[in-house]
Image 1 (tube, one colour):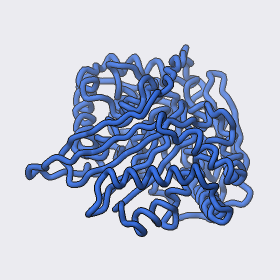
Image 2 (image 1 turned 90 degrees about the vertical axis):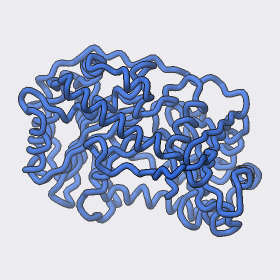
Image 3 (image 1 turned 45 degrees about the vertical axis):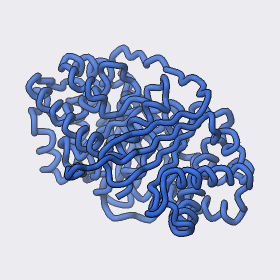
Image 4 (image 1 turned 135 degrees about the horizontal axis):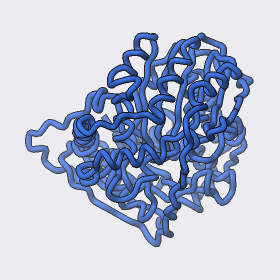
Length: 467
């Protein structure tokens, strides 16, 4: 099945969906309460009393974009090792205690953050805090456990990237699209770096970044903020802060012409991936530009009535699948991406021409008011209904806080989307979707030679990590 790439994808989790049935979206979202402990730990609490549940999340300001050559993949491998125990809670105890309390736990690593979470009943928060505070500073990094887990991650990489032709194309694409930005490195790490990682590398990484003054705790659910702050002070307050020096930004140089690459890999069908250098909220020339790019993405790929599906898949039938993606909330600027698989009887050049024509149309013709209103209404509705999940609410707060934008932006997001005009959509298309900012990757299918291309099972890596 065609899998659309997500800009700066994280190693995510199937358990994200394993939450109570959707609740009614709130017209007036509850207030977020904030407190900073003496050791620098920030605590965010958002009460939501619609069900007696909560999610507790610990977000660390470190991910693959913090890594340098020779140790890529260290953040994700450390995430795996965080489940290997401490002196107080030996290997297996963490998950056993969580399960005995009817809860679930997992973690995910992205380019800009690493996060750990527990979804549990609202009267069990102290259990999550005790366990997370313990492993924030007291992790056992046993050499034998490290060697085994490095093998697990290597196998995860093989199944999810090396043996997945579209994922492999995406990895090569980002390595070419970005000349200096650390976004050119895969979250899971380059094979050679994984091979040479030592347990000492993880110890150094853990000591440097896993500190209370480099973390944000987010709790959303049926809770009282003052009680949450008291528990946070009890369990996290005694932890010692570290001297944390954020990495120097590796600014991406100006691209001076279209880049193209061909990826040869065993595959059953060709695949096209295109990406334009675009700003994020953190560096946009005008504050409305990222929101206009999000609306533009939804115009192209916002459901069955969006342009790519309507005109390229069902209409001209040039593509068997086509998509667009953009992320406004990242630590560094990223890409506006288009991708697709040509339909039978059509080839990559025809699909590329069709996608370029869609981009050109956006530049030449302002989006009709009725189409923009429909797309914008759908996009805003999706964002509003994300509030049905306490988990999704916490993720948005944690993500914004961790990439340096501040959680307050979550409360302004829908309003800023609603303010986007047809002229602004056309303006960002003209400014950013240009040939000199474009990278194009083509998957050239090679004979499979009887080899069965496998999809990794959900549990690979022990945490269900999925690219």
